[in-house]
Amino acid sequence: MVLLTVLIDLLVLLLPYEEIRRFGFISFIPLIFCVLRMLSRDRDRREMENDYFVSAAAPFSRALERRRERKYQKKTFRFFVCPVCRQQLRVPRGKGRVEITCPSCGDKFIRKA
Ligand SMILES: [Zn+2]
Image (cartoon, rainbow, N blue to C red):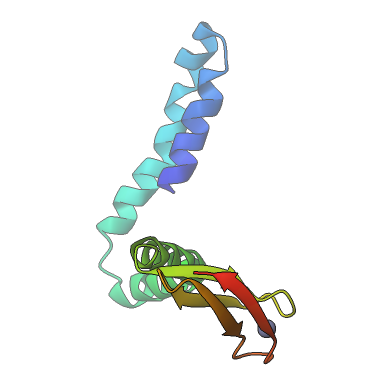
């Protein structure tokens, strides 16, 4: 809803000045709806909505989590992609030339870690 408000605001900004004064209030409608939702006492419905949101956002939050984890591991590990099955592989840094065996498909390849 907040994103909808921002989107409407951006669209309204594209209008000429006189039109902004006339249609600027439209972006407040989803915002008021948001505030009413926050003040709602129907906790079961709000919990259901929150569960739906959490499950819908899960793939994105998992991807962000993986990216953050990779950023910290980059100092101690090198990451490679298996040329056969595209599996992501992790090898300790500073080991020189290593033969990497893919645990997924069993393919072996040599890289500098
Ligand atoms: Zn593989």
